[in-house]
Image (cartoon, rainbow, N blue to C red; front, side, top):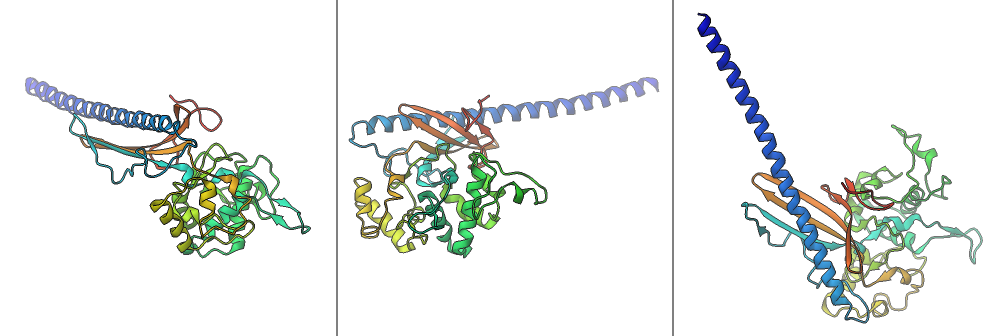
Length: 343
């Protein structure tokens, strides 16, 4: 009887140990596969950096550097053919131009009061662009005053002081929310920060997200060779807050695709823009890009991961200044004030 009891106890211990070992082994295998997939994704980042360096070398032969959608680096990650891996999985990825979007951090510059008419609010060229972008979202049905409130509130979120702008929101607004919080009073590092700004509803955030970016340089130029028709609609006569029509945006995009634009002056001579006063916005337009978004995806065994990397090109050097597994919301930030040190 005692021998049977000892045998039963030993059997139970062996079964328990085997179950624990199987669980430990599976956890280890999962960690190993995840690290392997992530290594492939970082490899995709290296390949993207190489493509951007090659593009820079090609542009050095031109009188003026250009980055446009017909170049080899401009690959749609959703349509590119996956590359088969030796382990039986696959890897795919593509680059997009973040300077083809509106840079939210450009709203840090303040409005001025005065000019030819006393007490007249004079919005910056960037503010006018963003107001037009908001008004161009027909599904939101925003009025001009609504767009101004949102624009000024974002500016207050970005600037370093705690003095609210004429139509903005600072700590006095945010401490009254539930739960209470404070304005960042610093440049954004993630598009998702918009969700914390006064008057930005989930619907507004979702509508804006495909057309905006947060770049560390508030003075970065809008690349007219890669901007979508929606973003092109933000280019209109100085101090006119209404956007271009949808047809006008599509006309600009069609001419760019079929004939191209030699330079910014050529772009501004398009029939849609010719005759408009564009002195304010003209200095914000360019043909080349420093900031790109890599969207990569890899799968090994049953493990699939995504990586989104914001790449900054400085001559022949390409740096990852933000990484994320969730779109443009960085979870790993790198380098300088905009980003922290990578592990």
